[in-house]
Length: 240
Ligand SMILES: Nc1ncnc2c1ncn2[C@@H]1O[C@H](COP(=O)(O)OP(=O)(O)O)[C@@H](O)[C@H]1O
Ligand SMILES: [Mg+2]
Image (cartoon, rainbow, N blue to C red; front, side, top):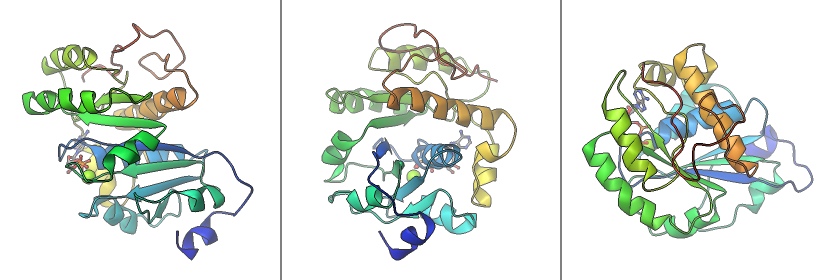
């Protein structure tokens, strides 16, 4: 952690820090988009740090365009502990990972409080979902998140069925919307505007909070409720 983090976040007594990792070996699935949306949504109530482990620097570039101090972008060595972030008062660490399987990824995922796996509802992404589910089988908290779902598509129902057979599915999905890349142009997130994309992003953050608090019972709108079944919940946002 550089001095700049200390300048932006008051150093205070040790607080628990939770970690959410966006992971899938598939490139273009939505890791960076979800990481930024979650970090920004969470930053309205928490001290949030965002780490970009992708050498392509998508999220770092977004942050440079942002011009806002929160969430704060931090340098992180994925092979080293993150006590410095805890000491700096970070309450939530969101980690954006590169495509592929870097050597550190197994240990990093095991250390996370939650792993989110974005998946597009395409045959290629769905085929890749089974090995990812196997690799996360022993992790206590991970979930697929459907990403870039075309509006009004029949692909959605089939994708949900297939993913629910492999693991937990977030009850909120991200529709393919220009609002996501449009917000990123100026280093913002869709959740900083009004509209359907904002509702999806805030809905995902609501779901993430239920998992981090130890309960994943949410309804499609992110409100407390009963899950459909132990694994593979109903998806929330209808395809629009
Ligand atoms: N829900 C969405 N709607 C429209 N475009 C999206 C959406 N999610 C991601 N994108 C775009 O798709 C591309 C890949 O997304 P990205 O989040 O960078 O994936 P990854 O980090 O997994 O490689 C980017 O250009 C991003 O702006
Ligand atoms: Mg990325």
